[in-house]
Image 1: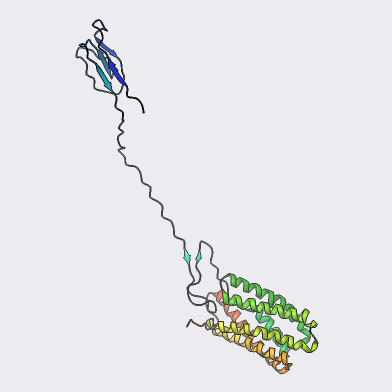
Image 2: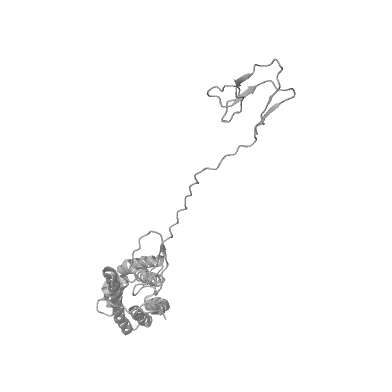
Length: 300
């Protein structure tokens, strides 16, 4: 804090300075009280006049401790806060005919691109099932069976397994489980027939194949029961696959050639239904509308 300056004019002696005006303080004041007979020079704003005064007279000038600053005449500018854009939420209200359950699918947040991916394209299953079923139905000689091994390992197994993993990643649990399970089945069957069946005694080869088919039959039952919320074509197709597994399992385990041949016919029917599902889904994806009906099943 600045100290308050005090200016004191002590009464000069009678023989002090001459009477008159002399510039002492120049400031911003504009009102000066001076004797009328003293001329004010130009440019002088504050003037101190010294004149003989009576004894014991003291003049004191006090400077205020505070400075008052007037408020600005123009009010301050106010900047409004820009509103925040909400995050867009996109939901799919209508599922594909043979796709997930009716209702809102998990939301997609952000500016990404939505691409509809066909959910039911069981082409690998249909191809390898048709090839093996033609052999079981005795429509083709068994000498070409090694060709089925390679197709089952690569196309029916690996390709279908990868497709199932993609469906699981996209949140389609039923299709993902269906494709991964049957993909793993075809890989297992191809590996057994190509490399491991020769380690089994010839008399027990039928029992080994029957055990494989019986082991996968409960899995087919689970998938078939879960398909009652998809479409009628899927239900019939998986039901046909279930019957085929039972016939082939019993035929191989018990050595019944007739059951194996009947299982070949039901396998051909299952392959035809799988091709129909693939065609229906691909046509809907390509044309943007239903071309082949699959008769979806609504929720109960």
